[in-house]
Image 1 (cartoon, rainbow, N blue to C red):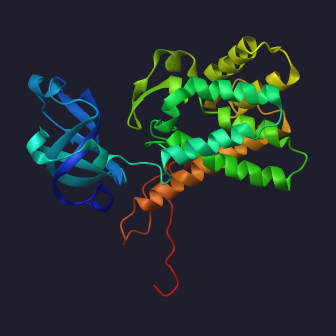
Image 2 (cartoon, rainbow, N blue to C red):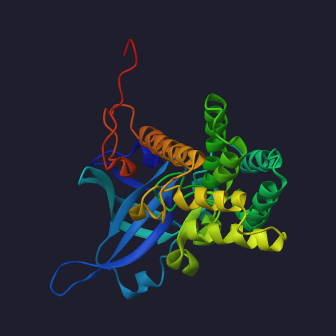
Image 3 (tube, rainbow, N blue to C red):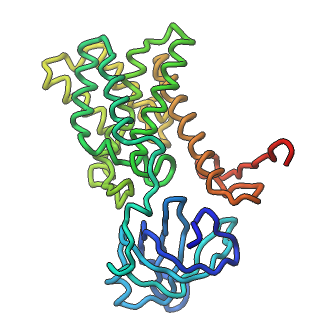
Length: 321
């Protein structure tokens, strides 16, 4: 079976896939007709797919997070590949498929990533700040082992949140060493906490976001984690108005930098400036890496990268090629 990563325009495809997302939409015809807007995935990537002229039975048969067998044709649409489905059915036990075979996962074991995060938290010498971080890690619980960092923007796979956090901790350690004026412990705590409430913002299964939760839609992870910090301070008998508590809240509230990106305030602490750019660097480089990994061997340009204003990435030829 051809992997999604190797799909090319015009390919006729028959194979098994994870139905990562299934949405019923309406065509622009008069009268409008229902169709399925799907995302199919395997361990190498994902592709948008369309199933036209669906029936009422189809609507009751196909749902997100199930395995399917699909026959269709790969087409290029607006500079992106998509699959026009001719036939689709649910996977049966006789097919011998396991959902684990179709999941993309972080390149480092989830247990090792969470251990690295816990180790970084334990190294925070400020007892009050460490206690707040530990409280929030415990609140995220086992979700930290498998949650993605986003629905689709970056690190959108099994253990993606822990991988994103661990890589940011590495960057933060380097930058704090290079810039001694930074409070390394505050920066470390901010990195651990900046996205941790995504475990409450999103409903995810096996690294795939099914939907955003009610609190996620109405509050968002930035506001949620700020509340977690206040909750931690109160439960631990700390002063919620203490400077280190307010500083930690400022880091998480400002890490998106702009109101249109979700931050109610802009960075006004040195560590907040560092956190924002470390977050951006890791997220954008991961998106570039993902785009390069998804390219076929003979491709020169990647698909448009959403976090880079839909710019394509050019892959230079290796010396001697």
